[in-house]
Length: 245
Image (cartoon, rainbow, N blue to C red; front, side, top):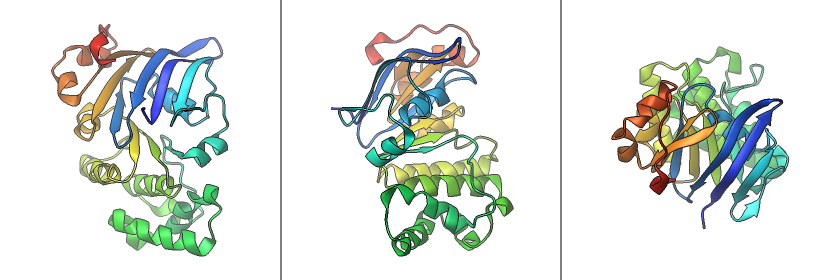
């Protein structure tokens, strides 16, 4: 049984159909990457899973349990953590305080959260020296690392990562994806990424979304070998690979 199973998911924003008939699965221990151009429906997919967007139709199963329509707090408690696009680090809190906020759903003692936040700096050594610095003083890459560390503090079984490379310099992107490669040893990851090369470099499986539909799916080498991936990014029409979906 898949850890996450999406069946015929539809999401609307008013009259706009953001997702139409999206189906895919994520096995425990995998990294699965969702690729596609702006407006393809990648972020909406994550928002539906984490309870930030209400599905109009379809099924979302997490560990065999339906979570479609549940609120974000209930979904976090079930073991899903969402690191949204834009990082959303609190500028007036220190780096360590921001990271500790990620464990607030667990009702752990503050002293325990403090120790766990300190341990996060082993995974994110580049931000260790900024532990007591305020959020607004950090660079984009450092903020991304804080956001991911905060997401991991919830001890999720499934981590949703939305555009972790967005706006970052290439050398910082490399560092962020090295960390994602390490994270996969501890938790399952569903990754939304426009940088196809980086997104597929850490993935076991990938799907391409185009105008709210999955048009292509397969293992990374299968996706690179199919010209339809280029069509999807250019807004053209790509034929689905039914055998891979």
